[in-house]
Amino acid sequence: MKPPPFRYERADTLDGALDRLQQDGDRIEVLAGGQSLLPLLNARERRPQVVLDITRLPGLGQVGTDGDAMTVGALVTQYDLGERDGLDDLLAECLPYTGHYATRHRGTIGGSIAHGEPRGELPLALLTLGGSARVRSRGREREIPVEDLYVGPYRTSLRSDELIVGTSWPRAAPGEGRAFAELAQRHGDFTLAAAACAVSVADGVIVGARVGVGAVADRPLLVGEAAQALIGRPPDGAAAEAAAAATRAAVPGYDDHHAGADYRNHLAGVLVMTAALRAMERAGG
Image (cartoon, rainbow, N blue to C red; front, side):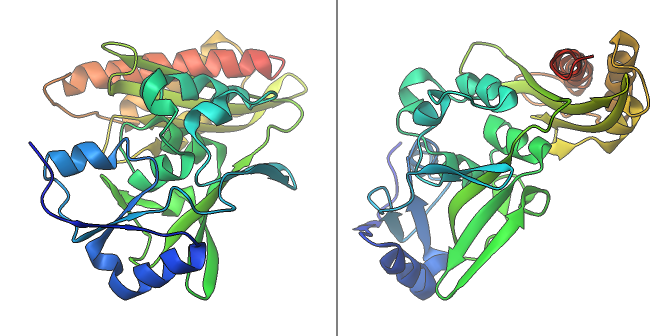
C-alpha cells in the first residue's frame, strides 16, 4: 500500500516547528527518523494532513550530562548513541536489538520514545532506569517521567502542540548493576518479550531494584512485585528465581499471531531472571 495524501513540510528551526504544532498539532505527524512512521503511513494506520520533517532542526543532536544523568537530544540516532564509549550497560545491551543495523542509522532516540511502541526496547530501557523526556511547546518546557508518558499502545501523554526535544538517562550509582534481555523470532524482528533490571547491592544484600518488561502488555511495564522480590535478598540465583516467579504472577501476557499469552508469561519470567542475574553480577553480587 501507499500512504494517503498529505502535505510535506520541513521545519528549519525549533520555534518554527513548535509554531506549526501550536497551529495544527492534531493534524500533524512529526517525522524524526521515519523508521516507524513511514510503515504506518504506508499501511494507512496514520492519516495526517501534514507530515512535519524536523530532521534538520539544530541543537537536538547532542549527547551531554546533567548531574547524574546522561542527556540525549531527540535527533541523536540509535546507531550514534550505540557507538559511544562508556555507555550504560543496560542501554548498550538494548540498542543492538532496536530494529536492524540499517534502520538504526536513521532511527532517532527521541522518535523511538515518542512513538510508544509497546514492544520497543528504548521505552522499556528508559522506564526501567527511571528516566524522563524533556518536552517543549511554544513558551513552555516540562520534564515528563517515563512512568507518566505512556498511556496505551502508541499513545503518550504529550499534547498535540508538544515535541520531545531530549531524554534523560540516569547513570548507575556505585554498587548498582543493570542489564537487558530480549527474545525475538529473528534478530531485529518485533520482540516476543523483553526484560530490563537494575539492582543496587550493599553489604551483600539487594537494597534497591527496578524491573521492567516489554511486549507483554499495551505499553512497557514496571513490575513492582518483581523488584520487591529482589530487595532484602542476597544477590544470587534464588533472588533471580523469586523475581521471575513474581513477574509471572503479575504479568499475564497476551495472545497474537506471534506467540500465546502462556508462552509470553513464561518467557517474561525467564528474561527477568536472566537480566537480574547479569545485573547482580555487575553490582558486585
